[in-house]
Structures are given as structure tokens and as C-alpha cells.
Image 1 (cartoon, rainbow, N blue to C red):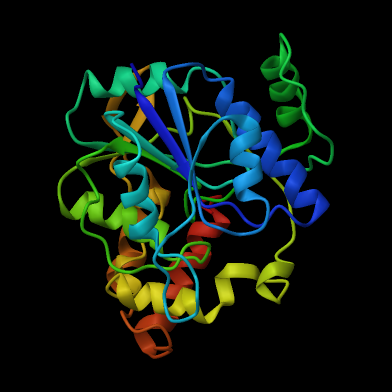
Image 2: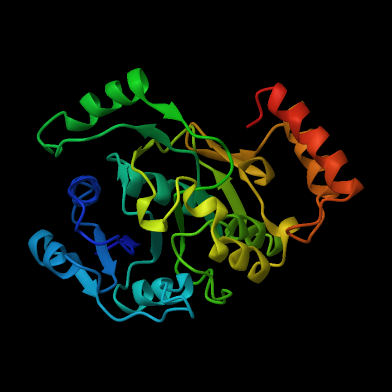
Length: 299
């Protein structure tokens, strides 16, 4: 029986580097075993061929916004409609999972009914195809700790949750910032267990540029990012991992402990103007609090 459905909307399999890292990601998901469904959503170049080659499900048709960008809500619906697995895992198509993901989700599900697992990633330069032979995960994990960099707490590249959650979402654009921050906010608003799983779930983000978005800054300074922020309710809804109230440690879900960094983040969130371009007094004070958080290592 399938326990997890991992789903994503890949970029076109056109650029050689993007093709390599997306194939690596797919290989790692397949290595999780027979309990996992995999669904690729979208009709961009090479997706159908990759789905056929790897033997995974493909949903070519997905609703888009006025810019032609697929909607997050439509991608989530496609996963529900094409898998009966009780737990869904959205993940960006450049992310490598290690073995043990299924077991981790099941451990959390045994403790709490409504949850979403999320966490930080390790950024790593990966330029060659990976071979998923015996011991691949130990070899990559060694390289990850030696050469990789733990990303900031600003967002999450994966979300694992029971299939009945997140059925009512604003029409966010995929591949732009903001919607992942709203996922954290929404979990808090609905009193679901939002669980920072960084200590238990290692993931590798294979580095790439953002040339497909016509700018070196990528999705952070894109018009659709601003639209996602407004759709999510404004800047005060843009949560980060420091706003997540639970953590996973040694297989147990527990309240995240108090820290000066988390306290500063709470003050920062209260001061945050809701409008994207509000640069008034509240914003200037908020920036000073944020700079103090950064100085304490709370990025």
C-alpha cells in the first residue's frame, strides 16, 4: 500500500544542468521504495518523457494564472486525484531525499493527527548524475556536511502532511516566493502541528541559477512573488521556520524551546507592516530588530 505521494512541478528538461539535478532528485525519491507514489505535474519540455522513463505518474494539464504559471492549488489537487496515499509530500524538483522519509512521517502521524513537516535544506553543488547504488546516501551525506551549506530559515522546499489538509488555498503561483511562508502561517492559524524537522530530515538542494526567471535574484524579487504575498494576506502572513511552534527531535514532536532569537522574531513579526512597500517608522524599527536577530545568528 502506498503511504506517501511525492509530487512536484518540474522545470523543463531542457538545460543540461537542470535536467541532471531533476533526474537526481527523481532517483532519490524512487530509492525510498514501493510505499511511495510519485506524481509529476505539467506539460513543459521533457516532463512526459522523464515520467515514462522513471515509471512515475504524469499529469500534463494544470490550471495556470494570468502569467501562465501553474497554480500551487492545482498541483496539490493533481496529487490528491492521482494517488490514494494518506500522506502527501510536495517537494521542489531539485531536492534529494534520503532513505527514511516514510518512516519519519509515520512516526509523526502516530503522535499527532494534523501536522505539516517542513525544514531547512543543505545547498550543495551537484553537477554529475548520481548513482543510487548501495551506500549512496552515506556518501552524499558525507559530501553534504563537508561542502554543503545549511540554508536560512526563510522558507521550506518540502511539505509533508495528511491529504485532507491544505484543500483550500489561494491561487498562488508555483516557483515564486511567498506561498511556502503562507503554508506555515496557515498551519499556525488552524492549530495544526507545524513541525520544523530539520534535525531529523536531511535534504539536499542541488544549486542552480535563476536564469529561467530573467534575473539573478530569482523568485525573491519577482512580480508574482508580490502577488503571492498579497494573496496570502500580506507581509504579516509570511511566516518563517522561526515562527513554527514545534520541532522534531529524536523522533518526538515537541514544543520548540524558547530562545532569544525566537523572541526577537516574535517582536519583528508584530512590528511588520502588512503592506509590501510600507517603509514607514514601524518598518524601520522592525529592520533594527531583524538586524539584531541576524547578529545573534538567527537567519
